[in-house]
Length: 343
Image (cartoon, rainbow, N blue to C red; front, side, top):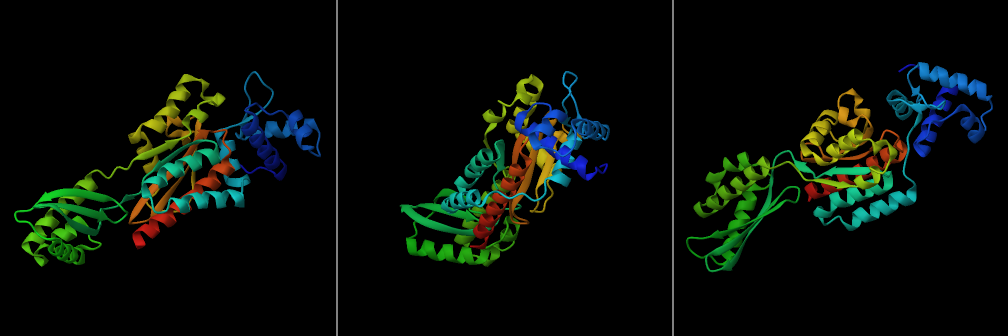
């Protein structure tokens, strides 16, 4: 990035903020009048021309006003925006909503998508947390009728699997409880392969149950691609940037095609939890995103279970709000995932 003078930085920051608010090219006259700048219109016009030469601004051929380029947005985000936090009352409201949903894992992602979309005024994408490998937490065997037994398997992270078993001979609930206790002692916290290696530590009936558990865990690992929760797309599509069909289609592809989203997330986000990334105009890698910006963050517990969340909108985005709410919600979800695994 070419370094700007302090005055040029101020002017670039004002252009970005004005354009984000108005979606109209910003003129030197408008800047001087609106912000009571202590310099003449001619001076601002000269500075705008210099900033444009450096690649941070451009201007439509029909207008004398300037609009930010991708590089201009990047300079704004990295050099001018600074640390931004949501107002305290918004953080308290969001934290309270997640506190109420703390015991209902299935509500975390829809709530996160709704909060992100509403607060950042963009479209939100949230992937469910996925364990790096399914790990055993505990099971219960519940006598139902005759030789029928309900197996309830709980994996680390809260995933619950149920199966109906038909026993060779009926067992009372006390015997089933004893078997469950021994299996839980042997298998607690283990992955499928680790459990397989410990079958000899169990009685014949218990090892039969555990073989089924291993099969269930293998299937869980094979279908580990998590659901994606979306919110706010219709609001973003009303923005003038997406009036053109190709830009509209690019945005819809990001929101709807799971494989494309996974490719973007895998390329932009590393395996470690922490930090917010901002992707502007596809960064030259994804043509579908040339009219979009994404603010993304991983969440969860590295090595146990992680997911990702993002806010998607036009490059003319309220970056401060988007970054602050993505960071805040990622922190809340990470805490909740940690608590779930620490139980």
